[in-house]
Image (tube, rainbow, N blue to C red; front, side, top):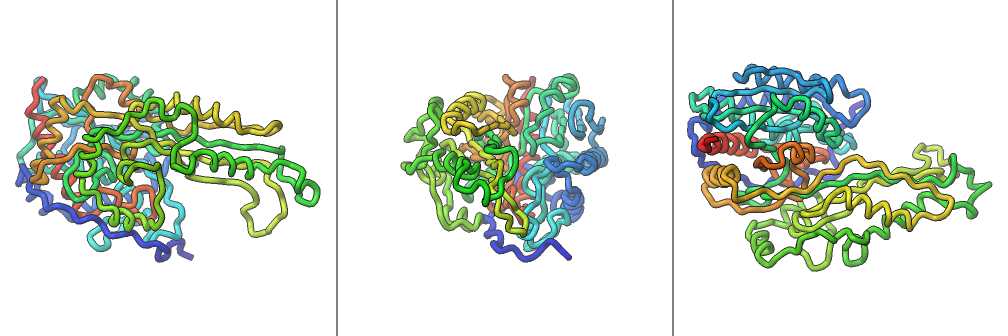
Length: 481
């Protein structure tokens, strides 16, 4: 029996995408002439279920890395190889045609994807990519594979149309991004010579806002923790213990209830200690983005909204920190209807962090807040899954200005600087390249269903992203060492 059926909540309409006016018409012509090959190549990559978070998926992560390596080799890159000594397999390739005086750009993406559950909400199998109404649908199309694929295809197209920029390009496609990049730090250290670069470029999924051009000037950080609450060594029969023992679900429910106040503020003492005040100028910039709340609601199938009092939806999304319950697990989940009090309950929390919040400081504050809410005799453990720092780009640097010029050329309109509500560069990149420009290039918007069932990338979005990367390669080539 198939796991897939028509979803209960169909994906909302995609935002209308601008018809690009490229600075490199040869690249656009090449893309249009090879669009079937490009989309077929991406689709075959999407079909590989490279879910790093699932036990036993190592072979598929290796398969996805090998596919990327072969594709880059066929595209004309050199030294295509698999790096797997200290981490999950990562694909690497380079094109060093710019020479010693040209900047070297390291493009970092990932081939691992989020789990696809719940399967019954997909209208087509998540790992059998389908093209429907101008969209490439499948897990990884918008988050991970699609964005880095556009960056690769931009370089391939420029080379194929004799427009190769005087730029050195290195591509690193890792396989652990969806589980917090736990070994990226070790990989960057072990391969420091191979991965040496002047500029870092990170494709960012779902970062476009509204219908106009946006340049991402900052991203949220992320802290994900799982809290386990244990009140007994095993589940207890209600006939023997009901009404006389602490239920871990009650404790967990009280914790999640206490996490935010009626005004939407997170109640952890010190949580807002480093949060920057949103200035009048900052609010004006966000207002200028043309954020369409109705389209945003439709894209997520959202009816009810909430959040911090005194801030607009967009301000809550990109400029204010957040705390969300992302999963709850406890009790008997079979159909047997056993009357037992669970011995343990778990809750997974995600904290969205803004400059200048630090994940480890927030973690320490959360632990202290939690300890004060744990009854005597109850055991609470906190496991950390991700701790990525927020980031603000140095907008006065030549590389960032090159991204602004490329965006303006492709959209034929001046872009607006904005922050992205999701995470951008992994913390390991920020630590290993603290003085390097890190450019985050947006691909797609909220309508693409990132992390959700029916994830997809419009053909127009893939085309726009490819042309944008191509124009960025040309702009960066104009910078000299």
